[in-house]
Structures are given as structure tokens and as C-alpha cells.
Length: 255
Image (tube, rainbow, N blue to C red; front, side, top):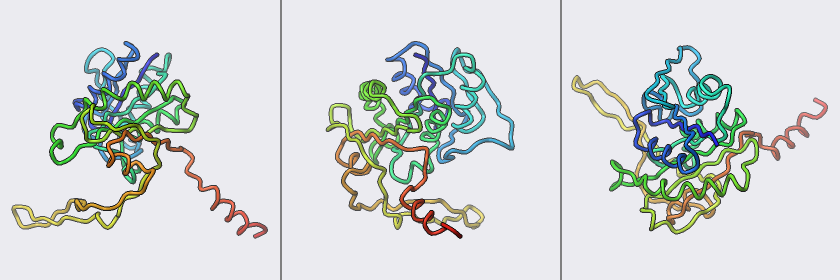
């Protein structure tokens, strides 16, 4: 098996080392192609107006001056074009990628691009809390990810499906189980703009979130992490809403 590892936190991120270690539990043929700099929140963006710079860090390890999507394309369509990977692992992200995070996440986007290119792909993210913010429990992902990945590969990941796996902010022995989950939805009233002033009294702004407890829905990725379970969510590339499409077909019929 040949495994491609990427992320959005950058080539020097500790979680990338965890992801490579997870990959090496399956094979020695592990290639790391990751962004030169932190690309968190870039979603599924491509670098179309700027050239891509490729730097070899060491054997089978490269940095790309671009997005996670750029990295996967660079690996599959250039570095490994004659022998493409059998699996893409994206992560391990520093912080969870659940609910609306999926739309923003470069980590999930790396897995999406692998899926678009016809390669089974899994996004891996490690949640953290106030106490673990500076040192997330990547050991939890390292401990539990190999078994989950093997189960998914043995079952077979269907074409067009991206697997999004999130590990709760707990030590490995504190995990309470594994849950197949739906993508959750946060209370968007928690999002706000934080206005500040610089040394010259000019305003600048941060997108911020209030840390307020709210009820999570059963069966979602949000609830699973709250309960200390590993969340495994299948995401579809095809975002068509078929029931609404059917209604639109009736609406536009004969028009």
C-alpha cells in the first residue's frame, strides 16, 4: 500500500507527524506532501493565480507553497504520477473539524481532493479544550486511528464519499466508543466580530466565537465528541439536494 499524507496546519505541524506515524502502521511506503505554511480555514481552494513552489524536505517528504488541495494534486499528478497512492490521510488536524467546520476546513478539503481524484480518503482531526489547547492529545488519534482506518478499508469506502474522523479531547483510555454520525449544526448566534485597536488606535477585527454551552442533537458529530466518542462521518461529494431538485423539476416542467 502507498499512502499520501497531507494536512492544513503546515509541514512542521506536530499533527502531521502523528498522521505519518498512523500511516506507517500500514506500510513503509508513506509520502508526505503538505503546505509550506499554515493553511487552516482555506477550505477547498486552489492556487490558480500564483505558481506552486515545491521543496523537498527529506526523502518522501515535500512542502508546497500552496493549499492542501494544491498539495494533493501536486502529489498525485506530479510526484507520484506513475504510481499513485492507494489512500490519502489528511491531518491529524489541530482541532476538531465537525458541523460547519467541514465547509471551512483545509484538512477535510485535502481528503475531498483525494476522493475527487478517485483515491479513498480520510480526514483525521484531534479536538482540544482550554487545558489542552497548546498540547492537543494527538496520542489519542495515534492510538485509535489505525483500527478505525482498517475497519473502513475492510468495509470499503464507496466512490464519491469522504470519511471525516474526529477524536474527542480525551486520553486514549478515556474514549467511550466509536459513533457513526451525521454532520451537526452549531448555534450560529455564537459567531461574532471582535473589534480591537492597534497601537495607533486604528481598528482591526477577529472572527470569534462565544464559549457558551448549547444543546447538541443526538446522532451528530457534535454530540459524539461531547460524549467522549470518536465521530466517523461519511460526507458526499455530490451536494445535490434530490428532494428539492424533484420539486424544482415539477416547478419548471413545461416552462
